[in-house]
Image (tube, rainbow, N blue to C red; front, side, top):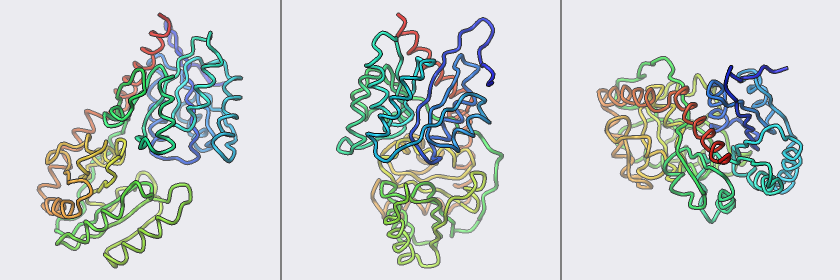
Length: 365
């Protein structure tokens, strides 16, 4: 029997987090980090997931219930299965949709239980274009009591939500690490999923256009087995950079920044750029476009650098600033200061819990 997180004299709010992700992306690691820190703040976190690894990590690290459902092929069938799961899971009256794909089932569950005083929250860590399928699903957020957004950029792109707020995700501060190189030819990293929205081709062209012979390392795997874009990136990298281009699969989380002097983000619609926050926490300088959520995490010239989004020449010119060792040391130091103040796990979990509790209180009035 799992132990309760209830504190003497207080009422913990059982909160069911629902996810449809079959892989451990950044959002799932954020969810775990939140759940680990959230129980002292009157939240009893439960999990409904199709991800066995996430469920095992939840039980081991959070010490709370994690239920598994088998995800079928097709989003309609998945939502029907989720709806059946929710209709039989009446313990938690506060539910958090931790990805957009599960929102139809959760909204229908809420509408089928009009007298239950259920609180439905959507955790928005995506910023889909309105023309995309997920962009259309976002419209269902008007049935949610609250949208907790990963960045101001995401919040500005959600016009249907009744109530929205921004809570940055928790990022632990690792031990400081030394900068790897003092010379001008650096190892630049593009880290995370390999899919078209990441605009990795911009990073390849930018490094190729730079006057210094930088090496570009891409670390990640194709999204959901889509190898077409992976091959495109591989061919372009080898064509423009030759042996200065390396593409690698996933590495252990504690080694993701090994050998990397700076990180580039190219997606102009990046919801928040968790990798930006992780790099800042690790003391690795970051270069981001001046659009999207990643830009929100960087003050240009202080804790990171910005370039004109989609402009390869601007990116190449920005790389010149990174060749200065004193600049990299400054960006590294101030990036860690930002991570310490803005991404502290305990502080961010409390903010997240306060938003949930606030939504519950409003529903009871």
